[in-house]
Image 1 (cartoon, rainbow, N blue to C red):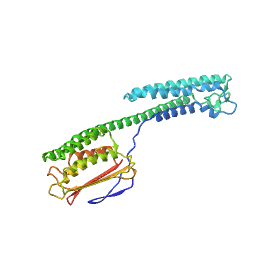
Image 2: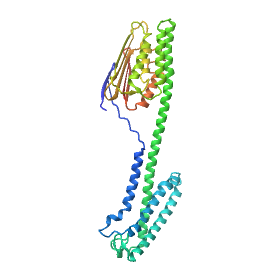
Image 3: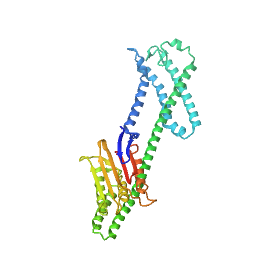
Image 4: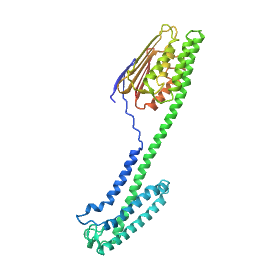
Length: 384
């Protein structure tokens, strides 16, 4: 995303947002594709002799004599793929895995050699070969020279080929296992994130309720007629917190309505000379979703530290929906820290905001806070 500049009361700040990493998942489509690849590969192997035919030389008998050779390769491949790798290699029984495969490779190579001799005998008896008159499926175009090649070389050729089959089977199986482990790790991380988010929400609710009840209690001490409407506003806020806060995201419009109700509640105890400026610029047909209560701690902080009787106090809040789902939240307030141990930005609510932003919007948010000339300013920009 392009770099942009955002102005706070402290000057200009450059920032950039990195695109989130996509999540890897194994789908039904991928399973189907893997099955298709296996079938296509074996079809090519079984049909390999057909690529070397000349017109009129095809013989089903000799083709059937060729079929057992790739079948032997399939047996070695899938014996490893479906059983040996899982039960020996992945169980850290490497010596047993090697010994069993050595025996399997040597035994299969011997069977292939015996089958080759058997098919050669049939062709020499006068049968029409798949590859031409008087030629066996395992012979070269010049059978006289092939007979001079030591049998051991053919046997070693089959051993090497079968060894490569075992290596290929192991490589495919291990790559699938690594992909599965990666998916499981991501799912575990997601479950941990969701559990942590749920825990943070459970902490936000009592924290928010405590602050709101303190405000109503302050009104009750003054026997203010505003207590009843304050309790009504509180019931609306609690309804949102209890029912909407169970989801990871809510419509931005609903979150804005919640913020409006909260600000209406805060108005009841503002000093008469306090200045409160609220601006919401949300698109009429907005479909943007946002994490619930993500802004409320920032607004709480502004009212908590921005209002003081007998002092010039102000709170300016602006929430704007930009293009491509970007949300800009700007808040500035007069700064009256309560005491040395209670500074703006050090409360429980703001710590929870930081954690939730890191979990929900990694590389997709910018949060800047500063205190300058008696004004506390915060800028939060989220790419939803």
